[in-house]
Image (tube, helix red, strand yellow):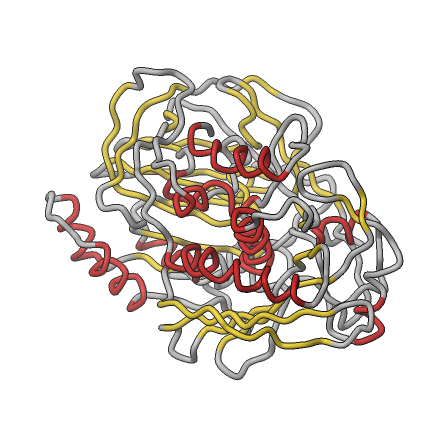
Length: 448
Protein backbone atom coordinates (compact mmCIF):
# COMPACT_ATOMS: atom_id res chain seq x y z
CA UNK A 1 0.00 0.00 0.00
CA UNK A 2 1.17 3.51 -0.37
CA UNK A 3 1.56 5.92 2.48
CA UNK A 4 3.05 9.29 3.02
CA UNK A 5 3.22 12.17 5.42
CA UNK A 6 4.43 15.75 5.59
CA UNK A 7 5.19 18.53 7.98
CA UNK A 8 5.12 22.18 7.42
CA UNK A 9 4.63 25.68 8.14
CA UNK A 10 1.19 24.29 7.97
CA UNK A 11 -0.45 22.66 10.94
CA UNK A 12 -1.96 19.24 11.51
CA UNK A 13 -5.47 19.11 12.90
CA UNK A 14 -6.80 17.18 15.85
CA UNK A 15 -10.38 17.29 14.61
CA UNK A 16 -13.19 17.85 17.06
CA UNK A 17 -15.87 16.59 14.70
CA UNK A 18 -18.44 14.15 16.03
CA UNK A 19 -18.94 11.57 13.32
CA UNK A 20 -22.59 11.08 12.48
CA UNK A 21 -23.59 7.48 11.93
CA UNK A 22 -23.12 6.54 8.28
CA UNK A 23 -26.31 5.00 6.79
CA UNK A 24 -24.36 2.16 5.17
CA UNK A 25 -22.56 1.32 8.41
CA UNK A 26 -25.86 1.27 10.29
CA UNK A 27 -27.43 -0.99 7.68
CA UNK A 28 -24.50 -3.42 7.79
CA UNK A 29 -24.68 -3.61 11.59
CA UNK A 30 -28.43 -4.30 11.45
CA UNK A 31 -27.93 -6.99 8.79
CA UNK A 32 -24.98 -8.75 10.45
CA UNK A 33 -26.97 -10.78 12.98
CA UNK A 34 -29.17 -12.39 10.33
CA UNK A 35 -26.07 -13.28 8.30
CA UNK A 36 -24.51 -14.98 11.34
CA UNK A 37 -27.77 -16.80 12.13
CA UNK A 38 -27.97 -18.12 8.55
CA UNK A 39 -24.44 -19.52 8.62
CA UNK A 40 -24.90 -21.09 12.05
CA UNK A 41 -28.10 -22.78 10.87
CA UNK A 42 -26.08 -24.25 8.02
CA UNK A 43 -23.61 -25.62 10.60
CA UNK A 44 -20.66 -23.47 9.57
CA UNK A 45 -18.29 -22.61 12.39
CA UNK A 46 -16.47 -19.65 10.84
CA UNK A 47 -16.68 -17.13 7.99
CA UNK A 48 -14.19 -15.14 5.92
CA UNK A 49 -15.12 -11.95 4.07
CA UNK A 50 -13.67 -11.32 0.61
CA UNK A 51 -13.35 -8.21 -1.52
CA UNK A 52 -16.63 -7.05 -3.07
CA UNK A 53 -17.26 -6.22 -6.71
CA UNK A 54 -18.85 -2.85 -7.56
CA UNK A 55 -20.79 -1.64 -10.59
CA UNK A 56 -23.07 1.16 -11.80
CA UNK A 57 -26.45 0.25 -13.24
CA UNK A 58 -26.13 -2.66 -15.65
CA UNK A 59 -22.42 -2.08 -16.13
CA UNK A 60 -19.73 -4.69 -15.44
CA UNK A 61 -18.93 -5.62 -11.83
CA UNK A 62 -15.33 -4.61 -11.16
CA UNK A 63 -12.74 -5.21 -8.43
CA UNK A 64 -10.83 -1.96 -9.05
CA UNK A 65 -13.27 0.96 -8.87
CA UNK A 66 -11.27 2.42 -5.98
CA UNK A 67 -11.07 2.00 -2.23
CA UNK A 68 -14.71 0.91 -1.95
CA UNK A 69 -14.13 -2.70 -3.08
CA UNK A 70 -12.04 -3.60 -0.05
CA UNK A 71 -13.71 -1.11 2.29
CA UNK A 72 -16.99 -2.98 1.90
CA UNK A 73 -15.31 -6.23 2.92
CA UNK A 74 -13.68 -4.56 5.93
CA UNK A 75 -16.91 -2.90 7.02
CA UNK A 76 -18.77 -6.21 6.72
CA UNK A 77 -16.10 -8.05 8.71
CA UNK A 78 -16.28 -5.50 11.54
CA UNK A 79 -20.09 -5.66 11.52
CA UNK A 80 -19.99 -9.45 11.91
CA UNK A 81 -17.50 -9.24 14.77
CA UNK A 82 -19.50 -6.63 16.67
CA UNK A 83 -22.74 -8.60 16.17
CA UNK A 84 -21.22 -11.95 17.17
CA UNK A 85 -22.22 -13.26 20.61
CA UNK A 86 -20.77 -16.76 20.18
CA UNK A 87 -17.09 -17.38 20.99
CA UNK A 88 -17.39 -20.67 19.14
CA UNK A 89 -18.13 -19.01 15.81
CA UNK A 90 -15.03 -17.53 14.21
CA UNK A 91 -14.43 -14.66 11.83
CA UNK A 92 -11.32 -15.05 9.66
CA UNK A 93 -8.85 -12.17 9.81
CA UNK A 94 -8.82 -10.16 6.56
CA UNK A 95 -9.35 -13.07 4.19
CA UNK A 96 -8.44 -11.07 1.09
CA UNK A 97 -5.11 -10.09 2.66
CA UNK A 98 -4.43 -13.72 3.53
CA UNK A 99 -5.01 -14.73 -0.09
CA UNK A 100 -2.54 -12.10 -1.32
CA UNK A 101 0.11 -13.00 1.26
CA UNK A 102 -0.14 -16.69 0.40
CA UNK A 103 -0.03 -15.87 -3.35
CA UNK A 104 -3.04 -18.08 -4.04
CA UNK A 105 -3.17 -17.15 -7.72
CA UNK A 106 -5.80 -19.79 -8.49
CA UNK A 107 -8.20 -18.41 -5.86
CA UNK A 108 -10.91 -16.44 -7.67
CA UNK A 109 -14.49 -16.23 -6.49
CA UNK A 110 -15.76 -15.56 -10.04
CA UNK A 111 -15.44 -19.24 -11.01
CA UNK A 112 -16.33 -22.55 -9.36
CA UNK A 113 -12.79 -23.92 -9.54
CA UNK A 114 -11.46 -20.58 -8.29
CA UNK A 115 -13.79 -20.72 -5.30
CA UNK A 116 -12.66 -24.23 -4.42
CA UNK A 117 -9.06 -22.95 -4.36
CA UNK A 118 -9.79 -20.93 -1.20
CA UNK A 119 -10.08 -24.19 0.72
CA UNK A 120 -7.48 -26.78 1.66
CA UNK A 121 -5.46 -24.32 3.76
CA UNK A 122 -5.90 -22.71 7.17
CA UNK A 123 -6.56 -19.07 8.01
CA UNK A 124 -5.99 -17.04 11.18
CA UNK A 125 -8.98 -15.85 13.17
CA UNK A 126 -9.44 -12.13 13.75
CA UNK A 127 -9.02 -12.40 17.51
CA UNK A 128 -6.27 -14.95 17.98
CA UNK A 129 -3.36 -16.66 16.26
CA UNK A 130 -5.44 -19.83 15.98
CA UNK A 131 -5.72 -21.13 12.45
CA UNK A 132 -8.89 -22.77 11.15
CA UNK A 133 -10.10 -24.60 8.08
CA UNK A 134 -12.51 -22.13 6.43
CA UNK A 135 -16.19 -22.97 6.61
CA UNK A 136 -17.75 -20.37 4.35
CA UNK A 137 -16.74 -17.20 2.52
CA UNK A 138 -18.95 -14.14 2.25
CA UNK A 139 -18.69 -11.60 -0.56
CA UNK A 140 -21.09 -9.74 -2.80
CA UNK A 141 -21.83 -7.22 -5.51
CA UNK A 142 -22.56 -3.59 -4.74
CA UNK A 143 -24.54 -1.59 -7.29
CA UNK A 144 -25.02 2.13 -7.75
CA UNK A 145 -28.27 2.95 -9.53
CA UNK A 146 -27.84 4.38 -13.02
CA UNK A 147 -28.50 7.90 -11.69
CA UNK A 148 -26.15 7.29 -8.68
CA UNK A 149 -28.90 8.12 -6.18
CA UNK A 150 -29.11 4.65 -4.59
CA UNK A 151 -26.52 2.12 -3.41
CA UNK A 152 -27.44 -1.55 -2.92
CA UNK A 153 -25.29 -4.39 -1.59
CA UNK A 154 -26.27 -7.94 -2.49
CA UNK A 155 -24.46 -10.65 -0.52
CA UNK A 156 -23.24 -14.02 -1.77
CA UNK A 157 -21.55 -17.00 -0.13
CA UNK A 158 -19.80 -20.21 -1.07
CA UNK A 159 -18.37 -23.23 0.73
CA UNK A 160 -15.89 -25.92 -0.29
CA UNK A 161 -18.24 -27.23 -2.99
CA UNK A 162 -17.47 -24.04 -4.94
CA UNK A 163 -21.13 -23.31 -5.58
CA UNK A 164 -22.02 -19.61 -5.25
CA UNK A 165 -25.28 -18.90 -3.43
CA UNK A 166 -27.20 -15.66 -2.95
CA UNK A 167 -27.83 -14.66 0.65
CA UNK A 168 -31.33 -13.54 1.45
CA UNK A 169 -31.66 -9.90 2.33
CA UNK A 170 -29.80 -6.96 0.87
CA UNK A 171 -28.63 -3.60 2.15
CA UNK A 172 -29.82 -0.49 0.35
CA UNK A 173 -29.07 3.14 1.24
CA UNK A 174 -29.15 6.59 -0.29
CA UNK A 175 -25.83 7.33 -1.97
CA UNK A 176 -23.49 9.63 -0.07
CA UNK A 177 -20.68 11.75 -1.52
CA UNK A 178 -18.19 9.66 0.49
CA UNK A 179 -19.33 6.44 -1.21
CA UNK A 180 -18.79 8.03 -4.60
CA UNK A 181 -15.45 9.46 -3.49
CA UNK A 182 -14.23 5.97 -2.67
CA UNK A 183 -15.03 4.98 -6.28
CA UNK A 184 -12.98 7.74 -7.85
CA UNK A 185 -15.85 10.17 -8.47
CA UNK A 186 -15.01 13.82 -7.84
CA UNK A 187 -16.84 17.05 -7.09
CA UNK A 188 -16.34 20.65 -6.01
CA UNK A 189 -19.40 22.50 -4.72
CA UNK A 190 -20.60 25.49 -6.75
CA UNK A 191 -18.73 28.78 -6.49
CA UNK A 192 -21.82 30.52 -5.12
CA UNK A 193 -22.09 28.00 -2.31
CA UNK A 194 -18.38 28.36 -1.54
CA UNK A 195 -18.83 32.13 -1.21
CA UNK A 196 -21.84 31.64 1.06
CA UNK A 197 -19.84 29.33 3.33
CA UNK A 198 -17.01 31.87 3.53
CA UNK A 199 -19.60 34.49 4.48
CA UNK A 200 -20.71 32.32 7.40
CA UNK A 201 -24.03 31.11 6.03
CA UNK A 202 -25.23 27.80 7.51
CA UNK A 203 -25.50 24.83 5.15
CA UNK A 204 -27.45 21.70 6.09
CA UNK A 205 -25.83 18.32 5.36
CA UNK A 206 -28.71 17.43 3.03
CA UNK A 207 -28.29 20.64 1.03
CA UNK A 208 -24.55 20.03 0.76
CA UNK A 209 -25.16 16.42 -0.28
CA UNK A 210 -27.42 17.66 -3.09
CA UNK A 211 -24.78 20.19 -4.12
CA UNK A 212 -22.14 17.48 -4.27
CA UNK A 213 -24.26 15.04 -6.31
CA UNK A 214 -25.23 17.81 -8.75
CA UNK A 215 -21.55 18.53 -9.42
CA UNK A 216 -20.29 14.94 -9.40
CA UNK A 217 -17.82 14.01 -12.14
CA UNK A 218 -17.19 10.36 -13.03
CA UNK A 219 -13.66 9.07 -13.67
CA UNK A 220 -12.90 9.45 -17.38
CA UNK A 221 -12.86 6.22 -19.33
CA UNK A 222 -11.36 7.68 -22.53
CA UNK A 223 -8.17 9.61 -23.12
CA UNK A 224 -8.48 13.38 -22.75
CA UNK A 225 -5.82 16.07 -23.01
CA UNK A 226 -6.93 18.63 -20.43
CA UNK A 227 -6.90 18.11 -16.64
CA UNK A 228 -10.16 17.68 -14.79
CA UNK A 229 -11.70 21.15 -14.30
CA UNK A 230 -12.24 20.55 -10.59
CA UNK A 231 -8.51 21.04 -9.98
CA UNK A 232 -9.11 24.68 -10.95
CA UNK A 233 -12.40 25.27 -9.12
CA UNK A 234 -11.28 23.64 -5.86
CA UNK A 235 -10.40 26.19 -3.15
CA UNK A 236 -7.20 24.18 -2.53
CA UNK A 237 -4.85 23.87 -5.49
CA UNK A 238 -3.27 20.43 -5.75
CA UNK A 239 -0.13 19.47 -7.63
CA UNK A 240 1.47 16.06 -8.26
CA UNK A 241 5.23 16.05 -8.75
CA UNK A 242 7.66 13.36 -9.87
CA UNK A 243 11.31 14.19 -9.23
CA UNK A 244 10.39 17.75 -8.28
CA UNK A 245 8.52 18.52 -11.52
CA UNK A 246 4.73 18.78 -11.99
CA UNK A 247 3.27 15.91 -14.01
CA UNK A 248 0.68 16.27 -16.75
CA UNK A 249 -2.89 15.55 -15.64
CA UNK A 250 -5.15 14.18 -18.37
CA UNK A 251 -8.72 14.19 -17.16
CA UNK A 252 -8.38 12.47 -13.79
CA UNK A 253 -5.29 10.43 -14.78
CA UNK A 254 -1.61 11.05 -14.07
CA UNK A 255 1.30 9.01 -15.45
CA UNK A 256 2.42 5.95 -13.56
CA UNK A 257 5.57 6.65 -11.53
CA UNK A 258 8.68 4.70 -12.42
CA UNK A 259 10.56 2.70 -9.82
CA UNK A 260 13.20 5.40 -9.26
CA UNK A 261 10.79 8.37 -9.30
CA UNK A 262 10.47 10.64 -6.25
CA UNK A 263 6.75 11.27 -5.65
CA UNK A 264 5.58 14.47 -3.94
CA UNK A 265 2.44 16.61 -3.68
CA UNK A 266 1.78 20.31 -3.19
CA UNK A 267 -1.29 21.76 -1.48
CA UNK A 268 -1.84 25.52 -1.83
CA UNK A 269 -4.53 27.75 -0.30
CA UNK A 270 -4.59 31.06 -2.22
CA UNK A 271 -7.30 32.31 0.15
CA UNK A 272 -9.65 33.44 1.46
CA UNK A 273 -10.75 30.99 4.17
CA UNK A 274 -9.06 28.24 6.17
CA UNK A 275 -9.26 24.64 5.00
CA UNK A 276 -8.41 21.20 6.32
CA UNK A 277 -7.23 18.66 3.74
CA UNK A 278 -7.14 14.88 3.95
CA UNK A 279 -4.70 13.69 1.29
CA UNK A 280 -4.88 9.96 0.60
CA UNK A 281 -2.95 7.43 -1.41
CA UNK A 282 -4.83 4.20 -2.11
CA UNK A 283 -7.31 5.19 0.60
CA UNK A 284 -4.61 5.74 3.20
CA UNK A 285 -4.03 9.20 4.63
CA UNK A 286 -0.61 10.77 4.32
CA UNK A 287 -1.00 11.74 7.96
CA UNK A 288 -0.27 8.73 10.17
CA UNK A 289 -1.62 6.27 7.57
CA UNK A 290 -5.18 6.60 8.84
CA UNK A 291 -7.87 4.75 6.88
CA UNK A 292 -10.86 6.25 8.67
CA UNK A 293 -13.67 8.35 7.21
CA UNK A 294 -12.08 11.63 6.04
CA UNK A 295 -14.20 13.70 8.44
CA UNK A 296 -12.50 12.12 11.45
CA UNK A 297 -9.01 11.86 9.98
CA UNK A 298 -6.33 14.34 10.97
CA UNK A 299 -5.94 17.04 8.34
CA UNK A 300 -3.40 19.33 6.80
CA UNK A 301 -4.67 22.76 7.88
CA UNK A 302 -3.94 25.57 5.44
CA UNK A 303 -4.63 29.19 6.29
CA UNK A 304 -4.81 31.74 3.42
CA UNK A 305 -1.66 32.07 1.28
CA UNK A 306 -0.16 28.83 2.60
CA UNK A 307 1.52 26.02 0.66
CA UNK A 308 2.77 22.66 1.91
CA UNK A 309 4.79 20.05 0.05
CA UNK A 310 3.98 16.50 1.10
CA UNK A 311 6.98 14.26 0.47
CA UNK A 312 5.93 11.07 2.24
CA UNK A 313 3.77 9.58 4.97
CA UNK A 314 3.90 11.51 8.22
CA UNK A 315 4.85 8.98 10.87
CA UNK A 316 5.25 11.31 13.85
CA UNK A 317 5.01 15.00 14.81
CA UNK A 318 8.41 15.67 13.23
CA UNK A 319 9.20 12.66 11.00
CA UNK A 320 8.07 11.34 7.64
CA UNK A 321 8.73 8.28 5.49
CA UNK A 322 9.33 9.25 1.84
CA UNK A 323 7.36 7.46 -0.83
CA UNK A 324 8.96 4.78 -2.91
CA UNK A 325 7.66 2.94 -5.97
CA UNK A 326 7.26 -0.82 -6.26
CA UNK A 327 5.97 -3.00 -9.10
CA UNK A 328 2.34 -4.09 -8.66
CA UNK A 329 1.18 -7.56 -7.72
CA UNK A 330 0.34 -9.63 -10.77
CA UNK A 331 -2.91 -11.57 -11.01
CA UNK A 332 -4.17 -13.88 -13.75
CA UNK A 333 -6.36 -12.39 -16.46
CA UNK A 334 -10.06 -12.16 -15.48
CA UNK A 335 -9.25 -13.05 -11.86
CA UNK A 336 -10.14 -10.90 -8.87
CA UNK A 337 -7.25 -8.86 -7.48
CA UNK A 338 -7.65 -9.20 -3.71
CA UNK A 339 -4.99 -6.59 -2.94
CA UNK A 340 -5.78 -3.18 -1.46
CA UNK A 341 -3.78 -1.02 -3.87
CA UNK A 342 -6.41 1.05 -5.64
CA UNK A 343 -4.00 3.12 -7.72
CA UNK A 344 -5.50 6.45 -6.65
CA UNK A 345 -4.52 9.79 -5.15
CA UNK A 346 -7.40 11.58 -3.42
CA UNK A 347 -7.80 15.08 -1.95
CA UNK A 348 -10.75 15.77 0.40
CA UNK A 349 -11.17 19.43 1.41
CA UNK A 350 -13.10 20.75 4.42
CA UNK A 351 -13.79 24.40 5.24
CA UNK A 352 -13.45 25.31 8.90
CA UNK A 353 -11.46 27.11 11.52
CA UNK A 354 -8.52 26.18 13.73
CA UNK A 355 -7.44 26.99 17.29
CA UNK A 356 -4.33 25.98 19.16
CA UNK A 357 -4.55 22.44 20.52
CA UNK A 358 -4.77 22.17 24.28
CA UNK A 359 -3.78 18.51 24.43
CA UNK A 360 -0.94 17.60 22.05
CA UNK A 361 -1.50 14.22 20.47
CA UNK A 362 -5.23 14.26 21.18
CA UNK A 363 -7.36 12.75 18.44
CA UNK A 364 -10.96 13.13 17.41
CA UNK A 365 -13.62 13.04 20.11
CA UNK A 366 -16.35 10.57 19.26
CA UNK A 367 -19.34 9.02 20.91
CA UNK A 368 -18.95 5.49 22.26
CA UNK A 369 -21.48 3.40 20.35
CA UNK A 370 -21.21 0.84 17.57
CA UNK A 371 -22.28 3.22 14.79
CA UNK A 372 -19.55 5.67 15.79
CA UNK A 373 -17.00 2.84 15.93
CA UNK A 374 -17.40 2.47 12.18
CA UNK A 375 -15.98 5.92 11.51
CA UNK A 376 -12.64 4.57 12.71
CA UNK A 377 -12.70 0.78 12.65
CA UNK A 378 -14.64 -0.26 9.59
CA UNK A 379 -12.45 1.08 6.82
CA UNK A 380 -9.34 -0.50 8.31
CA UNK A 381 -11.05 -3.71 9.40
CA UNK A 382 -9.87 -5.51 12.52
CA UNK A 383 -6.20 -4.59 12.33
CA UNK A 384 -4.59 -2.46 15.02
CA UNK A 385 -0.94 -1.92 15.92
CA UNK A 386 0.43 -4.03 18.73
CA UNK A 387 -0.59 -7.40 20.12
CA UNK A 388 -3.54 -9.16 18.57
CA UNK A 389 -6.58 -9.61 20.87
CA UNK A 390 -6.90 -13.24 21.93
CA UNK A 391 -10.65 -13.44 22.51
CA UNK A 392 -13.79 -12.24 20.74
CA UNK A 393 -14.71 -9.99 23.67
CA UNK A 394 -11.23 -8.48 23.71
CA UNK A 395 -11.42 -7.69 19.99
CA UNK A 396 -14.88 -6.17 20.36
CA UNK A 397 -13.59 -4.02 23.22
CA UNK A 398 -10.57 -3.08 21.13
CA UNK A 399 -12.75 -2.01 18.19
CA UNK A 400 -15.01 0.04 20.41
CA UNK A 401 -12.00 1.45 22.24
CA UNK A 402 -10.69 2.99 19.04
CA UNK A 403 -13.21 5.77 19.62
CA UNK A 404 -10.87 7.00 22.30
CA UNK A 405 -7.65 6.96 20.14
CA UNK A 406 -6.55 7.63 17.11
CA UNK A 407 7.35 -3.95 -15.55
CA UNK A 408 7.82 -0.11 -15.58
CA UNK A 409 4.36 0.01 -14.07
CA UNK A 410 4.37 0.70 -10.37
CA UNK A 411 2.52 1.77 -7.27
CA UNK A 412 3.64 3.99 -4.44
CA UNK A 413 4.39 2.70 -0.94
CA UNK A 414 5.94 4.04 2.23
CA UNK A 415 9.72 3.99 2.16
CA UNK A 416 11.82 2.35 4.84
CA UNK A 417 13.75 5.51 5.76
CA UNK A 418 12.46 8.47 7.74
CA UNK A 419 13.26 12.15 7.47
CA UNK A 420 12.73 15.14 9.76
CA UNK A 421 9.61 17.20 9.00
CA UNK A 422 8.08 19.20 11.85
CA UNK A 423 4.37 19.80 12.33
CA UNK A 424 2.30 21.80 14.79
CA UNK A 425 -0.98 20.46 16.19
CA UNK A 426 -4.19 22.52 16.25
CA UNK A 427 -7.86 21.80 16.78
CA UNK A 428 -9.78 22.09 13.50
CA UNK A 429 -13.57 22.46 13.47
CA UNK A 430 -15.25 21.71 10.13
CA UNK A 431 -17.98 24.09 8.98
CA UNK A 432 -19.97 22.72 7.23
CA UNK A 433 -19.50 19.05 8.11
CA UNK A 434 -19.27 17.64 4.58
CA UNK A 435 -16.34 18.35 2.24
CA UNK A 436 -16.46 21.31 -0.11
CA UNK A 437 -14.28 19.37 -2.57
CA UNK A 438 -13.37 15.74 -3.15
CA UNK A 439 -11.07 15.05 -6.11
CA UNK A 440 -9.50 11.75 -7.15
CA UNK A 441 -6.68 11.09 -9.59
CA UNK A 442 -5.77 7.63 -10.85
CA UNK A 443 -2.10 6.81 -11.31
CA UNK A 444 -2.24 3.06 -11.83
CA UNK A 445 -4.79 0.92 -13.65
CA UNK A 446 -4.36 -2.86 -13.43
CA UNK A 447 -3.87 -4.57 -16.78
CA UNK A 448 -6.65 -7.07 -17.37
